[in-house]
Length: 153
Image 1 (tube, one colour):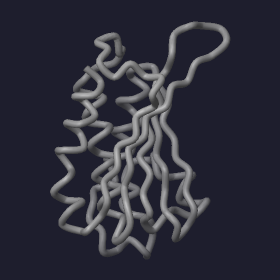
Image 2 (image 1 turned 90 degrees about the vertical axis):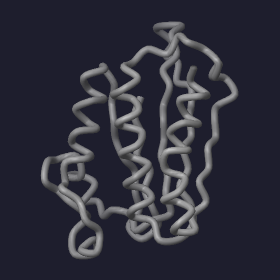
Image 3 (image 1 turned 60 degrees about the vertical axis):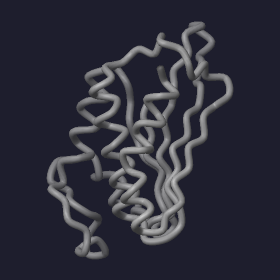
């Protein structure tokens, strides 16, 4: 069920967040039936994307919080709801230029500011590929020095 899935993802990264003194917050839209088994999507791919985004948020956040929020999105054309997963942090954020290339391969870190953060630059492009393979979309919103929100649905 969705609730167990979300709790499992939070549990998987809790230690890393606690080591950095970060608050780890889970907020679930009350319109989402969290005990449902009718969530479409490959559980392996969903977990890989979720963990990668949570791990990145923790990596690039030195103080404050990382939150995972779920929202229900329904279009007028259908009664089927889409779920948006948002991972928001209070980390170093991204410039407008960085936001335009962050999902490209081998874009490790975010310029000179991120030289202390290790990575291969493959995580976000892999996330994009996994989300798109399930028919979804992925994106980000960020403000330099104020944190980022990465989302997929």
